[in-house]
Image 1 (tube, helix red, strand yellow):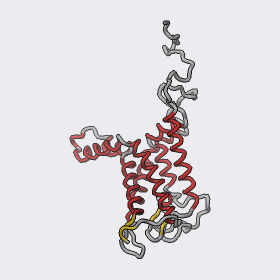
Image 2 (cartoon, one colour; image 1 turned 90 degrees about the horizontal axis):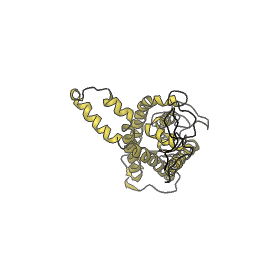
Image 3 (tube, one colour; image 1 turned 90 degrees about the vertical axis):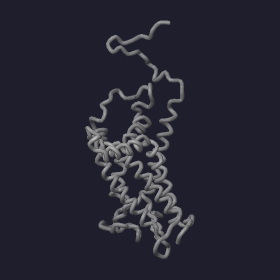
Amino acid sequence: MSAPATNAASGRARITARTLRTDRWWVPPLFTTLGLATFVIYAGIRSFVRTAYYVPEYHYLTPFYSPCLSDSCVPGSAHFGTPFGELPGWIPLAFLSLPFLLGFRLTCYYYRKAYYRSVWFSPPACAVAEPHGKYTGETRLPLILQNAHRYFFYVAVLISVINTYDAIVAFHGKTGGFGFGLGNLVLLGNVVMLWAYTLSCHSCRHVIGGRLKHFSRHPVRYRLWTQVTKLNNRHMLLAWITLGTLVVTDLYVMLVASGAIPDLRFVD
């Protein structure tokens, strides 16, 4: 059997087929596309409908509307006041946080891998040719904006603090004082997962110990770095889990706020 023809200049085999793989290599990119598209569509709709996003009896506020800072917010949902006036319908009520959270997710190292392969096809899978004639990396628009990920990280930490505050405020009884229901578990679980995802970020790992040349001289930072590294190894898993917890939290708040289901109360 003769050897395949090669290009003398490049030394690479002349393979005209898109790929020689015989497995179903297209399944992972397809499911990634469907998963990301489902979340984007759901989150996009919920961010603009302006209904059933707050439960006044228990102070449940969906993360898609936090922080709510305008006069358009329903009474009680503006945990940090209303420094802004009425907003037109085409502006989401959480307009200060959503762009940064979107930027944080889009520039995340895992999500880059996900949508580069499943949407941009660069490449769609290992050993599968991509449709682009050339590759410039993250040196030109729009991909050069990926370098802003480290800055989005700091804002994501601040928003996680706000979400934590929202979860604490939600421990509220129907008639005042302390209260505890299933909604609190949902909100708290979402916050814990969001913190895990945010702290597992590659930028967080770099901030804590990326510039250290001698770990032995910084034992505390080294200890923190090792813990963040453990989270970083699960960054992909946490990225998907948090998409799920965000949808579940918003859906639960929406169902309770609309009266579709009652909140299961343990202490009221």
